[in-house]
Amino acid sequence: MDQYFFIPHQAGELSVFEIGLEECAPGHSFSTAFTDRFLIHYILSGRGIFRTGGTEYTLSEGHAFLIGSRYGYYEADKYEPWTYAWINISGDAAAYFLKLTGLSPETPIYRTTNKKAVGEHIYNMLDSARTDGFSFHGSVFSLLGAMAETNAKKPSSDTSGASPAERYVELCREYIHTNYYRNITVRDICAAAGLEYSYLFRLFKSIAGTSPGRYLTDYRLSRAAFLLRETPMSVGEISDAVGYEDRTAFSKAFAKSRGMSPKSYRYSQKN
Image 1: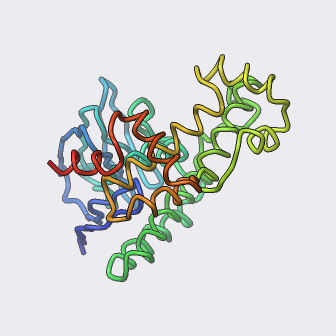
Image 2: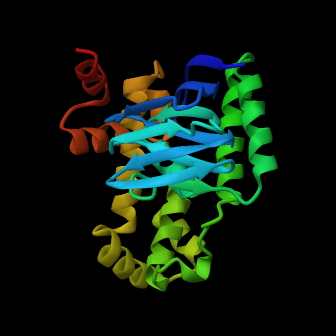
Image 3: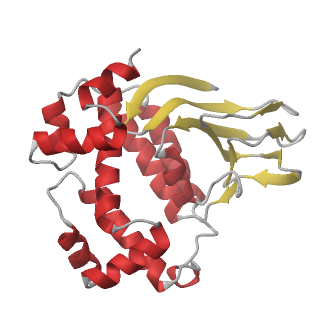
């Protein structure tokens, strides 16, 4: 039986527009492309073909394919038509989570090493679509996590190609992204990386093009801008939420970065 759910929920910067399950008729085909979202199909059984970027792929159970900014065409096999589940996601965090699974417009094909585990997460996600948003979004993250863990082409940390300097900078970025809402300082970032400030400053500047302190400030203010646009939180609440203990300091930093006060920015985004 085919299933379809429209999901009008959002989880931070990862939005889920729709999910579904379809038992395709022989030769069933479709083509599309998106500018603002990603469409993932995971094959539960059967087989078919997927074409994108001038390449044709023959896919079967345990494979997934991605359609984003590149045109994609897919067609069920005439003798063993596939059954697939799909999920349509968007948001600033969508590309990041997809990258963890190994999917991107440049690498649109995925294969799992554990069909049973991913299949169970698929059906759990479909079942939880009928429940509250917390359970549903938890099931989406669990599915993406399972896909990332069982990615047949998952690179090892030793073959990632990143230099030691790049890994240190990425570690600092992850620390900032995880802890920006706390009253952390550059000293805390140095401690997390285990590096002396002047050395970390040079690394960060050469790879990220900015200083650790500037990156921290810019990230906090980008999160503040998102909260001003997308939530009814007060300026004071947002100041606290992005790691500023002093609301005046937050307002000054925001105005310097965006050219207007937080309240003016919020008003400008609604008009």
